[in-house]
Amino acid sequence: MMREIVAVLDFGSQYAQLIARRIRECGVYCEILPHDITRGEIESMSPKAVVLSGGPSSVMQADHPGMDAALLEAGIPVLGICYGLQLLASELGGRLARGSAREYGPATIDIVGNGSLFERAGKKIDVWMSHGDHVVQAPEGFEVLARTASCPVAAMGNHEKGIYGVQFHPEVVHTPRGKEILQNFLFGVAGLSGGWTMAGFVDESVAAIRSQVGDGRVICGLSGGVDSAVTAALIHRAIGDQMTAIFVDNGVLRFGEVDEIRRIFTRDYPLNLDVVDAGGLFFERLAGVTDPEDKRKKIGNTFIDVFSAEAKRIGGADFLAQGTLYPDIIESRSAKGGPSATIKSHHNVGGLPEDLSFSLIEPLKELFKDEVRALGRELGLPESLVSRQPFPGPGLAVRILGEVNAQNVSILQQADLRVQEEIEKWDGFPGVWQSFAVLLPVKSVGVMGDERTYANVIAIRVVSSLDGMTADWVKVPYEVLARISTRIINEVAGVNRVVYDISSKPPSTIEWE
Ligand code: XMP
Image (cartoon, rainbow, N blue to C red; front, side, top):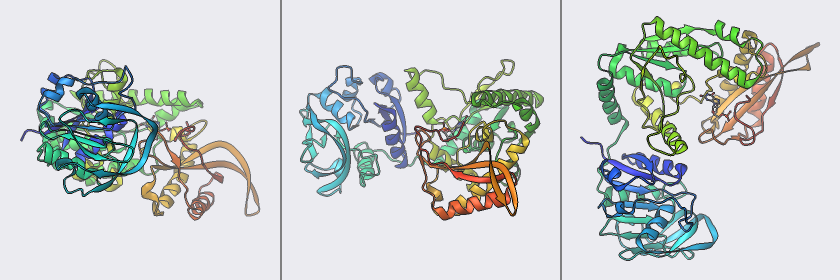
């Protein structure tokens, strides 16, 4: 069956991504496209509907981001959201006004028009508003479907053309019935059938990987994170032993991580796994290095050296697999200003030497992070791996301030293990984005028994975040912090003081280096 597609035109990436995620939750595949794409380019994809996203700009400014108005004559159903509604009104001859104040927050709209978009919604619904401008007069041929006291056109529609617009944000959770409104548009107005599922995605991807790879060979770097693990599992499902997964033990992984990866990929989910024990080499290269950027560079370069040597040792390959995700594609596209711009290279494997020439294979490049986790579950990967917290490429090295050596790593691993164990037992754990320990290179005085001690400080970092771009420190209950502190000080040799990091990002960062 041909995949049904909805095109989301991007007038501000964060808005567009949230809309896309909601549409996909409705079982409909969608892609985010630049707002200035032409009618012809859109038509070549045969989308069943187009959604115009919100965005931070004002249609009333001269240089506002626009769209190819011919698209509105193409007979494809359109839904404009917030900025998208205003753009529709302006392109089709409606009238806009600049609000006296920005309307931001909850509102209740009165539904005054007919059918379709608000089918079964009743007379009033709670919505989330966030706008400065608003439409005061709908274009000719459009019916006003909803209004509020301060917003005369909270929703409008041209039933004949299948073009609709809403001033509020149906994609946010603060519009409780937003998903129904999106469903009404997708299934009622645009006649989509839904049914895009992870099981279906696996089937499609397996077929695509088989046809891309043929009887070639693939190598896939495993980092211990979710993306690379799911990439490996999916490719393995498609081509079995034609893929070799390379896991580089760089000596700065969390306690037990190497064993866990080895166990998962030899026992629970067996695939062709090659574990390279390179801790010694990494420590050699890191000796005496204390500058954070130097550390990152040394680790990155050493990784490339080890990975390339291993790839050569196992006889090379035709393809290199990468766990690039959809937001990487969208963001690198908006950064470079065009859909054809090259995709940013993964920090781990960008910069491989030229005598190792691979074609890239990126089977997750259409997915958002939450979909990658769902895919991992679909493929049968264990929950401990699928719901794993993000972990930086340079590993514990950026959580050891000062020199990284085997002894410091061992102290940090032991402290970090206790943070993990106690935070996982706490019922607030599901709201935690990352929780970990940091080893500080300062020594302080303590007393244990009758003995004076002079030992290291451990800082604990627990943050909540949606995407790692901003973060807040989590108000972990004192009892939990007390247990962590007691256990670390009693059980980890070399530590006599524990502190809690109460800084948000910005202005701090999540990692300490
Ligand atoms: P910061 O410290 O910049 O981190 O607030 C934001 C998020 O990114 C992770 N992080 C990295 N991930 N390679 C990665 O793959 C890296 O070099 C790296 N540095 C930071 C960090 O753990 C957090 O989730």
